Length: 441
Image (tube, rainbow, N blue to C red; front, side, top):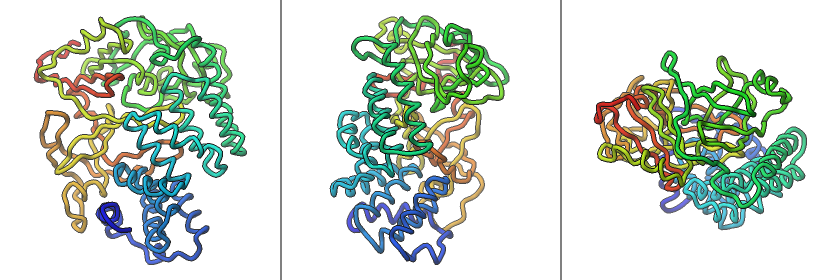
């Protein structure tokens, strides 16, 4: 590689691979075998291994295929801008993996039409049909067109085989049912109603929200930062749905806000499921984890707008991105940690953590051992302070999780703020509860 992309890759890789290089990783015995090793590592969640192999492959066989594989590994490690540079170079040569990677980056910036145009041809490629189909269908779903999403899932299923085809057909069925429940032109995900306060409760630091799903009352763990909403198999049976289904299409109500949503079926240790960001991405919402208060409103609701604009003097607007994966959406923050921006997620239940590669990047020293805790100046919107990060092992994004971020802002950070999401502006607002001296919201 030459130029800025090559320099950036060198910096990222030096942090990722410091002290971890294996002599055999630089040997490219066979291009097909090398590609297979990278694919297996990505599938199993060994993303740093995948990057190490891809870097050696790119050095010996530079070209669209190796650029795309390097970009995939970088993307999964949260190095989004560097990954985009490699995908853009691969896509310029028409490589389908490069096109899909670049489309993901475009969608994360809200450029959905450009993303669809870039990724549409990749759905017919058999070896990437599931990943491409999930992405393209998911973008159509986010745009409020589940009928188009269903068509894409079916096309991808025809190109795939085995379990991948079965999963895509199940998603097509969910989307068809969504389309049938939303007659007329697409609009804001189908949500109707005005601003309302969803009934919540706090138990041992966990917020629970009371919703109505399929006409039955449900108690869901509230986590607007979680990337996938779900109900338990037991709840599915309670409302007469087959427990063997992986996804259900059900009417859901939060206060006076009503629509139909796709919900995964997953086991949970307590409650009837999880209310996550994939459903809430089409709504405006205000959440105060300190008290469990939760307000929801449709994106164009004027009463909700007045509620959303409160306390602007202590509001910090944060750069936010959304990563689409099938019918799910992951919310990402881009705070400045140390000298520059870093990709992060937030977790209302765990600690604030950083993986070794990101720690080396923010400290600027890729050779020194990383201490178990690290205090770093962190800026979120207009707010800044030194935060303590616990060193965490790499979270190798398993399966279809779209991104494994190197930074997690944990409960000690999350619970000091009231969180507000504006889907039209694609911005996240944080209101400092200490600054307003009122946590009753």
